[in-house]
Amino acid sequence: MKLGIIGMPNVGKSTLFNAMTKAGAEASNYLFSTKESNVGVVTVPDDRLRVLTEMFSSDKTVHTTIEFCDIAGLVRGASKGDGLGNKFLGHIREAAALVHVVRCFDDDNIMHVDGSIDPGRDIETINLELIFADIEVLERRIDKTRKALKGDKGLERELALLDRINEGLYSEIPVRSMEFDEEEQAVVSTIDFLTSKPVIYAANIDDSEAGADEENDYVKTVREIALAEGSDVVVVAAKVEAELSEFDDEERQAFMEELGIRESGLDKLIRASYHLLDLISFLTAGKPESRAWTIRRGMKAPQAAGKIHSDIERGFIRAETVAYDDLIACGGMPQAKEKGLVRAEGKNYVVKDGDVIHFLFNV
Image 1 (cartoon, rainbow, N blue to C red):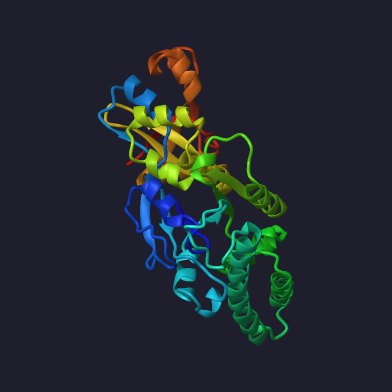
Image 2 (image 1 turned 180 degrees about the vertical axis):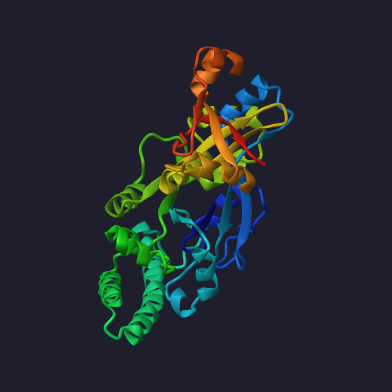
């Protein structure tokens, strides 16, 4: 899973990226300090793995991961090549979802490309540039479809859909906010729309506000915009997250308690990402390793097995499955089996979050 971190220049994207990945991306107080996209892999925290590792005396613990890509700041005119332009729109196309960092604090020592702090304006600027880029892609598709039309009823329906999307984009409505039936969605999915990607707004607040119960007016503005378009919001203090990333677990917890922070920004972002992309994790456990695997919600057992290895999916026989909570309550796999809580599930079983699974398959 790759998430692209986007936003205006100097809003804290690279600071947040560094905090999440410890990758050392440059975070400087001048415009376009990020000239190349930085990519970092972040471990998804899951305390269930620690418990399983102890229960099964596993030699290794393997967490699932998320890939974050820190994309250079976009400015007005980026879709036409201004700033660092189209090169970085291409990086956005590779992401499954977008983390849109919005500056929600005042600081005269940190310049803003537009000279003032206005989250609504910043969000509109980025959204419009993505919309302009989508219009360019869509108009090429419309032109191609019209040339291929020749009375094909299927293409007539497609052209009507494309024209409707184009009308929506010109009305500044992102594709993700438009409604499509199943047949229309199949067509939409063949076009690489930037505005179809789900968005998490990361409202970057001043470190002095970390842990505060009351949100500032800038954050409230971001929440209003997100609510209107069905997006999520995570409030982070990027500078504080950068400090937290330097501590070990015990120090981090103590620092968070001192600041009144109940959950780190990284944990909130990961949780929001899973919710946004409708992801869950199933678990495997044994002496060699205890491991988490990320899948789409609704995936059936053979396809989940395929995440481990394609041979397991091809030769799938059954999945011996127990819910994590039941396994822990019983104190071990033998006790869970004795109580009849370990089930033999077939090809139509829909895997649930926290399922601990052992797959049986033919080689």
